[in-house]
Image (cartoon, rainbow, N blue to C red; front, side, top):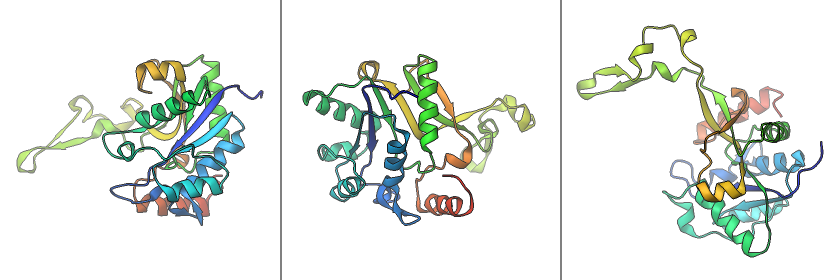
Length: 234
């Protein structure tokens, strides 16, 4: 496979997290969570450049230990709600533009999806190119159908969100997918205009649930460690 030109990888890694402080450098099997994204990016051999975006000096140090540049420490307001991944990536692109570094394609890898593999990145990129896509997102199928979801009203009364499916067997429910945070690929020019990666048509790269664990709290980290120790995932 020929190496694509002008492809940028940004790994957003903020230091603050309400439920799990410093989760992006929490240890998973003895390695910082951030390092899994860095290793996968490097081994894919897809990217022209790989950068980590953070406001945190500890995360900057870890990124540099694993051979990835942090061009600058981003403003603290980009590490707090309502700022999100889009804001962080647009800020990085603006900074790189000023340095004269121009790219065509952006690949976003979140540190909280450590089970993605280099092959996932390669396959997602190949799908992006094959489909002439402008926006691609990795997804996985819901483990439990969302069409059976219930909502609680007053006095502990529950009602179905989707009454038309409540009496049907789950096998008869439509397939439903969730974004898993592992891989996002966008055309940079359109990304700057739309200021979003949820743009139609949005190509799906489907990943199995065993590689789609998203680290949101310490339990997820322990589950991920169990998978790494008991299955040949990576």
